[in-house]
Length: 214
Image 1 (cartoon, rainbow, N blue to C red):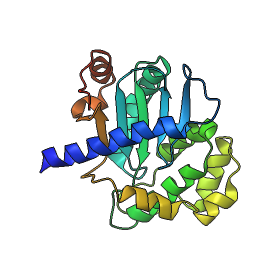
Image 2 (image 1 turned 180 degrees about the vertical axis):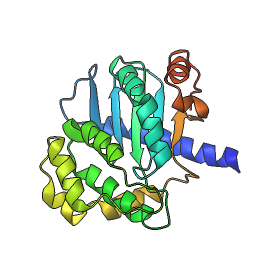
Image 3 (image 1 turned 45 degrees about the vertical axis):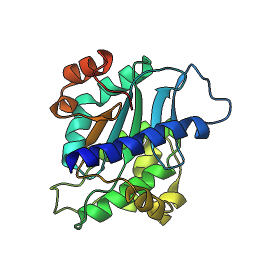
């Protein structure tokens, strides 16, 4: 069962990466590292002209373990991407079925789709910093909080956030991904384990070619 799950997620990730070439912004430099939003809402930080390995990060903004991973390794992941050593694809998903976590997650992810590329990483940082706690009890990520966080990140997208314009699209895309939990991290299609919380181990795995091509 787990092998089938990995294979399905890996296939989805491979399709997503192929899609970025089709949906990159016109005039985008082929040898520059930029953040680009794909048609499915995922965000890719990469030099699209390189043959660097692909790191797919599936995350739920209301997931405390995702926050822990973000705090531990995000700086390393972004540095490696900007050095052209890895192509990072961020997939925001909603993994929770119970409230208030499910609604928290949907509001945050829908708001993230409103935020332009140039402000998105700062907004993502803000989401994890303001994650509702205690998990499973606290309601949060109110539209007012999300509007304020977007403005602080440099994006004035009040109407989009307040209307939750992308909530349905976010849920539709999430439903296509057979995740068992978050964070789920794949390196060239291979699911990673505890090394995703260790910046040294993760960097070694990425730069030493620990992934397998799909």
